[in-house]
Length: 370
Image (cartoon, rainbow, N blue to C red; front, side, top):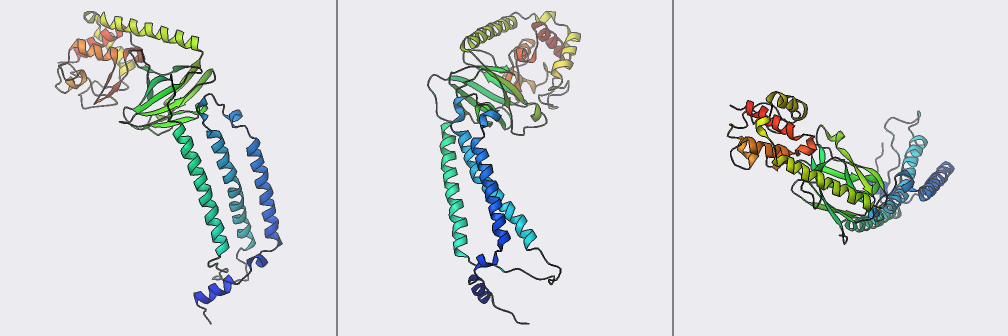
């Protein structure tokens, strides 16, 4: 048996005119793939993205156009690559009359082919990179007269803070139409994500980092706010609704919310802790508090710490900023919420607790402290 050197084989291969070795079926398949690609590209061109997913804010910044361009580029590549894979796998499959160790003709240094499959991808990557960078940076461009809203991710809810309101909100939130909005986004525990599909905005909520998103809602309606970063067992339920309303309706909502916050503050100041009922407090605890807290030692955490002996456990002063825990300071935390080194707790309004509920809870916690 004669063996040829790799150099000799490469010389022989490089002198082959491969166009003569591609029969009519190859060019027929190429024509079919080209027709399919053209049809798909035309369909992409006439496809209205906002008909599939409405645009409700001026934050688009050309994101839809960039997405379409990516489809223009990717679709023919997908069609031709997969089409040729199927064609060559069938056209040059191993024949029954060939030896088991038969190999095809190797290609060495087909310079024109290597130039094309290097230059074209590099050009496309540069175009996509520059276009994507310009689009990304436009999301961080401040807008004059913007409404500044803080959004803080928690396991597993969004906390929202508005200027002029002395309370945080959990759940649905409201924005005025046609007014620029700046979202100051962060997280209190793990990485979450802030995504409103119709606004074309999406940004990770990272602990210890405040990032900004800028957009202007342009369409009145209700839109989903979704966490898309896996953040624990309750990730699938971490969603709420953004309500874009008229300027007049927003002013009415804001005024009404201010009144509710003031009433809650007044109620907190007039709590009658001596009227609390420990038995009723236990029922409230089991219904609304036991998801996050256990009636056990401080270190036995669920989401928050254990609350047994809260008024006598030396570990618990952290809950009241380093001072000794008292019924009044515990009531203040339940009423106003907590954010610190051991976690975050919503306020009484967010937890749906009335003044009597707070008094009863304090009485129950007091009964569990030795």
